[in-house]
Length: 275
Image (cartoon, rainbow, N blue to C red):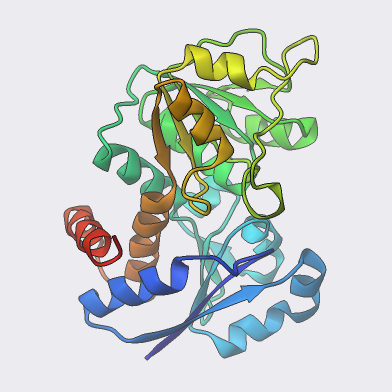
C-alpha cells in the first residue's frame, strides 16, 4: 500500500487522488492518496513531516520550487527545469514529469508543435517545464512573464526562447497559459498580457492565434479558453497533462519503466469511466 499526497496552495479541487488511484490500480498497486493545502510558510514549518508520513508526494502551484530546500538531489528533467512536481521521500529525490505529461497531452490531442510559434504565459514551475518541452519539440517559443527577475532566471538557464515582459507582436500559432490565472480566486479572469504601451492584448492574441491551451483543468473551461472558443479557435485544457504526468510519477514511485502507449490507453479508459 503506497501512501501518497499532493501539496499546493489550494488542492481542494485537485483530481490527482482519483487519477493516481486509477492508474496505480491498473498497474497492480493499491494506494492512499491525500490532498494537502498549505502556504509557503506552512510548508517551511511542517515540510519535514511529509518525509515521514508518505512514500512520495506531488507538488503543484506554488511549491514546485519551494520544496527544493528539503531535497538531497534532483533527477532528470527536475535538474533542467529547476522545479519539482514528484518527490520520493525515502531518498529525498525530486523529479519533474510535467514536460512529459505536457507533450503527451499535445500529441494525444493531435497538436503539432514542430516549427510552430508558441507563446507561453508564465515562467514559474509549470512555465519552465513547458518552455523547455516546446523548445525540445521544435517550436519557436516566446515566453511572457511580468516578473522580470523570474523571467531572466529562466532565460539564463534555457536561452533558446524569446523572453518578454511586454509584447510587440501578436501573431502566434498557439498560446499556452501556465500562469494559474483563471483558477481558484481568479476564476473568470484571464492573464494580463500587456503590449509595449501597457494595454492588455489578450484579445488581440486570441484573434490572431489558431489554438489556445490552458494548463488549468478546474474549471474545465477557463475564461481564456471560453474567449478562444467564442472566436472559433481550438481549445485544450490541462486535464490530460495532469493524467500523463501522474502516470510518469507513478512509474517513478513503483520503479516501473514508462510505456506512454499504455498511458494513452489508460487515459481513454479513465475518460470513459469519468465522462
